[in-house]
Image (cartoon, rainbow, N blue to C red; front, side, top):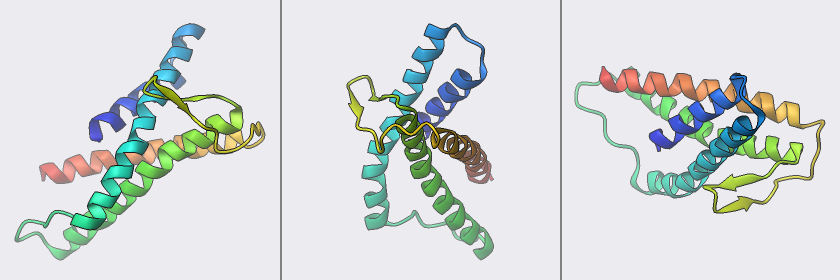
Length: 145
């Protein structure tokens, strides 16, 4: 899951920040969307698994404050993992663009084309993308601790 999220984040970041020829930029955005939509299907399996099996137990000797922070961090990570692709889906739907799933088929739009709402969903998508980057870095640092 982490690899898919990181790949989608990198593809999205570079396709939106680099000045690329139009064809390459369009292809990189489609690659970003194709990778990112996979997270929705992975989450559809991961969330029920987590609800049924619970979180892994913390090691003995981990202070209760750190355990509580870990639970809160994981909750935020799950929320962002869901909101990020959904906000991108809403952004693409509002802008009237297709959303490919691994190049196999397209997701249906979540709403009719509404250009006035596209910038709102775009900003949401960008903010959540940066939030998930911070959470992933925090997750890695705490795991290494």
